[in-house]
Length: 325
Image 1 (spheres, helix red, strand yellow):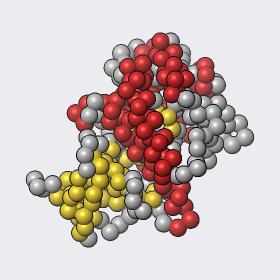
Image 2: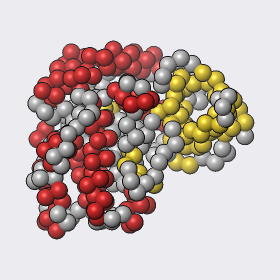
Image 3: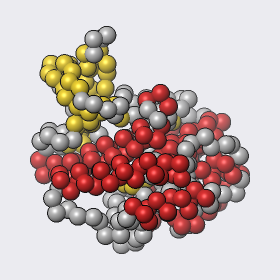
Image 4: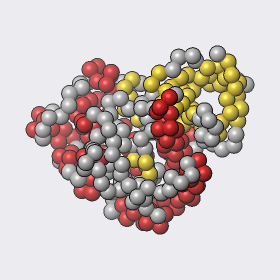
């Protein structure tokens, strides 16, 4: 079907396009649906992926998930310095319409298949390439001060050459009080499980699931059972002895940056929170103000750091070599 779309591009401004819209909608994580749209931009059709809240009882939760996508997508765009520098390891937000009764996000088309589908066809010698791509994506997220919180075989794609991390609907900024997450226990870190959830979101939160996903990739879709499996598949050696420490509490875990630099012995070229903290403070404040307008009375979550504390927490992490970026 044909229609018109008005939205805010991540590059700024406000645009309106004639669009051709696919009638088929599929689930896009929890409480969101996805469909393909083609924008007429004067030079032809530009294919994009549109996410919208589900109808019915879950719609309010869908609004919140969409807000998370907008927040993470715009922070990443800022961290990358625009579209030209945007990392291919992460799904790319093109624009959003977050103020109407029928809000949506627009993403560039995803690349690859979910690892839950692709794992059986991978090769063991691709493990390091996969690990570097996944950890690079987490470094960019940490550099933008965002935790993904839903790393799994369903949200991480593989096209045979490169990783792409998708689905920012669970993401939260560093310093936010952790909230319990439901989902498969194999992919929800202990600090997010109901009954044991505590502390504030930080740069090592995604590493627990990422390490398990590297194992999942290496074994063609098997889950890790115990520490002996690391030696069986030579994964402890791959990360220079750091991987076993990932299962510990988040405060003592290596970050994605640690695993790249000290585990894989590769340089990290991702910006650090120290470089980005000052410019992102204003955007964080703007987001909180907009949230209050959109959801009056929602207030600030318990344990949410004020801007000064949040900034210093990032600086301290960056200075200690544990910034994740």
